[in-house]
Length: 248
Image (cartoon, rainbow, N blue to C red):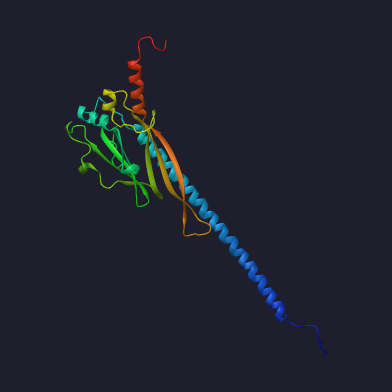
């Protein structure tokens, strides 16, 4: 039996192997980069979506509560409780880092809905989260009982939104400048510049920085909320004081 030997049957040369190895490394590196880019894009999309959801929730919750400031239900409130709302329907604290709103409601942010009562909610930022804590006076509490009794706070509050770096509240009024949160003073002297709303500025954690992944970019969101009950008081007072036949 005869066998045939092919003199041209040889393996890969060292150079060919090195070229193949380099090409393989480039292809594997490209696949890894593509995977990491896609993963980072997914993380960024999730972070952006979470930030937008946090902003929506914070704006809906806080703005809705601010709009309630100054609401008084004379049918159910004691006179002393109603007067406390008139005296301070809102208060800005700590240079604008916290806001308290006061009104007649069925419960504050840490309390279940019950009968109408005098309630007060305070908003601030602590440990990277938007916090709300509340206190209230029951209907049958004496009219002389003060809502600003610190023993009435219901614990340390609840976290509404995480990822909030800071918050700033600034008062707004029709005339601009410094304004008052005291309805009683305004009722005695209509020239008092009454606050009619606040701007709420939030700094929130956004997406990671491309160059320094350990750093998180901050995003700024600004909301405007009106004290609609206070505005109604102003409108009603102006209508009451209007001369007979005015506007006809």
